[in-house]
Length: 218
Image (cartoon, rainbow, N blue to C red; front, side, top):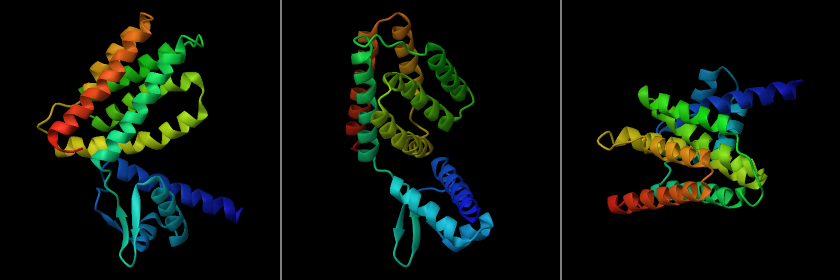
């Protein structure tokens, strides 16, 4: 029973801290104190420390000797590497979809797409990013490659966080481009045109990379 309680506390601390980091409530460069977090969450330092260890293994924070825990900045290079991996998985899935006669869950794709569009209308960038990633994940999951899905799971929140921080820092740039991209991919898939969907996916990464190079961020 005690072990279950401890695990529940670790889960609570982990979920709370991760949500704050991903939502930009704890920005990169913020120093965290185990003591202060334990007091705030009304628990001992042990579950907080375990939660921080988990977050560190995922790359969200880094422990600094005698200083505390620092919310880690996700570099533009790391962001582009993760995005390239995600789009490569999408392209591969579209490559083998016809070969394996795989049927996509078009209703689920449409739901993700609609939530993206509604998020743009509400100017909820984080929800937009999360649902745009869920759109891609819904396609990739169709081939049931658990290794690919595990990799993608490890990227989704970090990509959402990095994109959201970039959104906050660049109000002068037009955002929400994945809405048009995913609309076009969805339309191609509805028509059964996997080649067009694949072309769009490849073009999206090429465009994102060129923008990063032009801005000197990569």
